[in-house]
Image 1 (cartoon, rainbow, N blue to C red):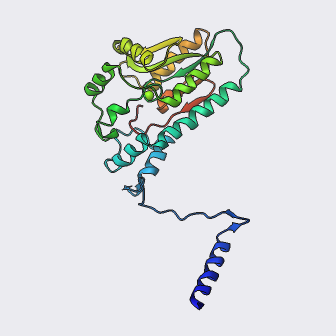
Image 2: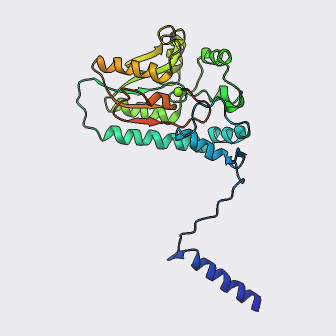
Length: 260
Ligand SMILES: [Mg+2]
């Protein structure tokens, strides 16, 4: 009995000292390193820290995801977190768009990247180690050629909401001119019914140029044509860095690959 009373008093004192006040729990739970899906160490950091570094653009120019993080990245992109993270970005983009008092002259556009922004290549990456395997352009282009990439649902919601606000959509993608027709078919099949422009890359003109250079140059042309880039959304930093980036940019999560 004495032991039980002592334990009760001990528990009560711990509860008080750890901040349970008025029924609200202010506990800061101790971090449990190495536990859970984010727990594998790579060079002294966890896979979740690696992903944060990637999303914040502190870790750049990486070629493949760390081998140790295949399971972590796979779980992330196939699980609820990727969807939630995407939702948080798209929701914020919509809140921003609807707050604007736009001139209704048909010149307001929103720039969408395609891969991992509008269409998802997860069916491909699930078969290729979630970014562990080095990029294989032949295999990836074969997949693109099938034209069956599904829509990213949270991005698609934003797409519809922007259209309903009277903002036109411009797709700006690193996909090549030779992939235009299959991309048009894929977009339509995936539920993207209308757009102002689909800009694909001229492989000759932009040979050896970075995505930042290519996309900046194409956005500049849009502005020279009189369009106002109200917003710009992509999964790569190269979608939203450079010049003529638009009034606001939004970065979607993508721990699968990096494009400079
Ligand atoms: Mg992309």
